[in-house]
Image (tube, rainbow, N blue to C red; front, side, top):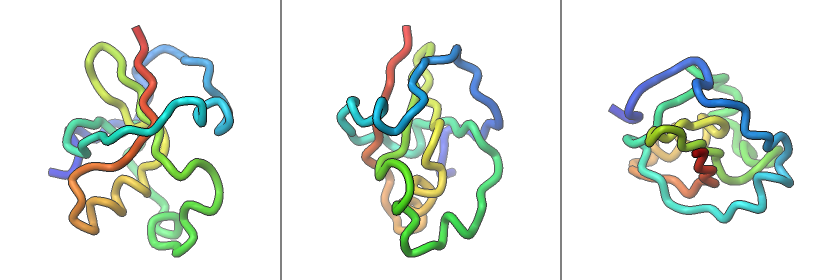
Length: 98
């Protein structure tokens, strides 16, 4: 299994970070793929397989930790690409909500 679970929604409350610039204030850290729950259940293969898949947006996935669970909010294609390359973890920006 690549991820802890596959979800299709954001079960946590709104956190207020709406732009890449706001997320960029959070330093990236390593997060294991098998500890994350996705918030999307589908993926656009064009995003996954594109050579310049990090050209637009943040270079790091966005993870929200709520009630002890890490939710992969943005960057599913980056996380899956890491898994396809045999990497068990990715550098991600992690926001912890109380």
